[in-house]
Length: 273
Length: 292
Image (cartoon, rainbow over all chains, first blue to last red; front, side, top):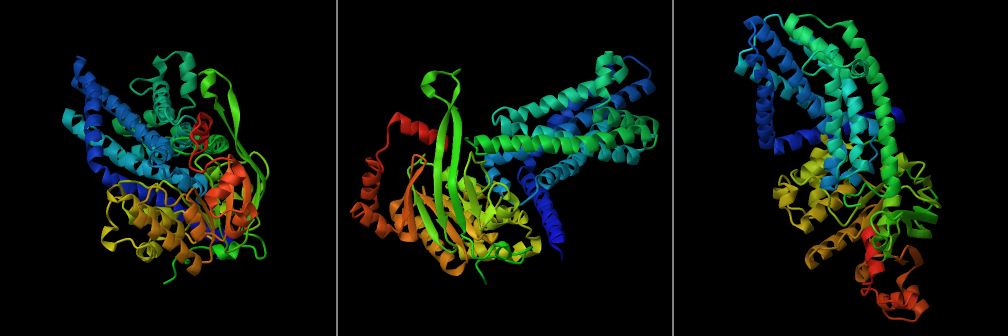
């Protein structure tokens, strides 16, 4: 094997290591995860019940409930992606392992993508449970739903979400105490401008412009159409997501590198530093 | 079985350039910035030099101890050589590779054991070691045999391999930390206070293991410690780092001869005019706070 092939193999093994570690940790914290899942379902119910409170026809109520449910599910999914990405640094700082990870011969891109890959897998499982649990609880019907298209669009959007998540994952390196929380600020802002529980057109025009660069806009629009109307993958939703992914990932990596350099210059990698 | 697993990737020894020192440090400087505690919350940050123009060389296979009190700059030196800090001047080469410009290559050659045996506390020793090994290209098949073998070598009881790290004693955790460092076959091992906080028995076990590593494994060792007896027992040469300055780096007998003293404590006093264990001024506390 050439040196490049060996290096590529080593990086893949490293990526697997990140995913494997997260599997171990998820197993160890599974009861906490179940508790958090209950909270997420309860929180989503508070949103979806709004559709019941509207005195509209049963068909309209079902559509409104599904629109809210898709928004809440995407919110929860994005929350998991950002949580895992910001934990790339925050958790390892807390455990004290970050210096060992950062002195290992693993490329930062692979390191961050490994974290993103697990976040996507885990997020999809949780989002699926959330969606079907709430739909069953409230009794929402989606007879025309094209779940395959909805899942495919979410998978494509995940590349963009990982790119943006990489940008937020650097925050705990800059501020060990408050950086992780800023990831949630990013999640909230992204969903507000993307029409999480409403159509983008209800927002002021300047917000609608911002919504065009948010990947959540396209996944919310596309997934609602796929689940409520049964449409397939729309190219109009796919190409912006691909462009955002192509831009966001190298940009996120560049931002992370600046943050890492800052931390190494000022001795901030260390937990108490 | 060998003390380390060597089945992954290009072996580290293949990367080592022949005929060059293991470590070559020349005029290495590192300064941190922090606010002066007395000047108030909004005062401008001041430069606090952690290392002043450090110069030394370590030959391949040598064990060198750097002695120094808390805050003397030992950990800063180890972090610079581990690619965890960016220097403010000077040069550091490991087996001929620039520690700052060729960090990726350096990372395959170096591993480190620090005073804190940092692990994922809920994960077991075997899981933590497997996780660390993946970064160095070791597959599950390789760690399935490599991890138990290295744990056995450091005297870790096999029945506790699956137990969460948080349930292990500090001495046990430090053994796992040593195993983690050796599992990746480093040719330069950086030991930063590896026995601090251990009970006397665990301390001796770890020291015995370091001797064993030297005799069985082609590793160069840089041991940073404030334990003079440990330094004298393990190292070929001893250096004294005081407030970021390397005062000397010589075989222990030469140090004693140079200052005309019997012990390293007396040598420290002769070199600095201060007692080794008696540094309690506020200025020293601030140094410790920044660089510990």
